[in-house]
Length: 407
Image (tube, rainbow, N blue to C red; front, side, top):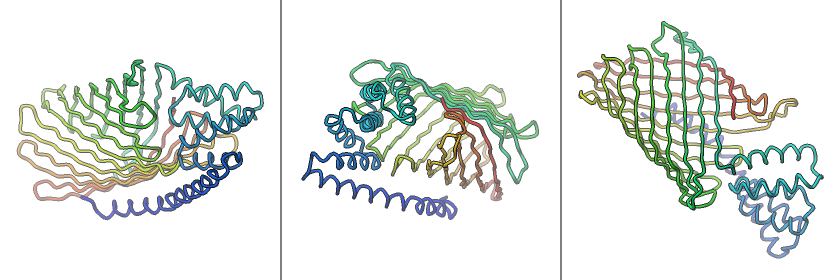
């Protein structure tokens, strides 16, 4: 299942990551060198500024905050240091403290226009995140074109995350998520589909700071519609347990287990029980770069039949944000790449078949306003299906263009 295209993609991403890792090691070495100088000259304000700057670059925000606190005590009128201190607390999840320092900086009257814009944005975010009820989400509308089959059509998808602070000592939040997607390639296609999911349940922070494990128990309702010649139309319920653990500024591990039952809305289709397990790790060598390795395993078993379907996949993604250097538009551009392999096996009414898939691709996202972006992408998909001893190979090059809104 893990073939040459995936290995080649992983190798390419590894080459992409190598200079970033070397850069991170260089920053850490510089930071430790400045720290040793501070030990012999703890009152040196220039060394404090340099140590705080390098700590932010290394994503060691606790060290940056501690140093900037000392610097602000020594230089209470240093607005730049206070703004940097507020940003460090914001990164640590201490939004109330961040908002305090942002307000003090704003009240000083000495901010540059660029600093004033930055402080106003961070104050809005800090107040929103410190609110007992917060939400965020996205909506994307676009068009997809498949080169080999010449299939094309419009799509729309989105998600909303709503969090309510329960106000207890365990920093419990009630988290509700809604996600939906729709693809309409035309009446002649069997690939049109509509899907939605509503998930809700309490999330506990087992460590009362920005890092440490978080656990969510949830209930889930879903629906799925597509052409009746393929998988049919279903509604479903499920229960699950999700775990996330931001170990530090760089590494986060997570897992998610869901089980439930789906009910067919057409008489010709059968109900089934399903299980799904996700496992992954995210690595952020810098503030602007992220790598994620994830795996998914799932199964569906007929309630009143021996039909069984299993699938598994492994996906590696890389993402890097950069400044495009253009005027009149936000300098928030993101380039992404991915590689994925998967395998599915199905036994339906005595007929077995197996599908192996490999895919990889890249995309570029450019913000044209603060919350509005354009994104274009391309993906290569290769599929081998084995049915009755006969293998069928299909390849597809898929182009997408979309407009998105984050809120």
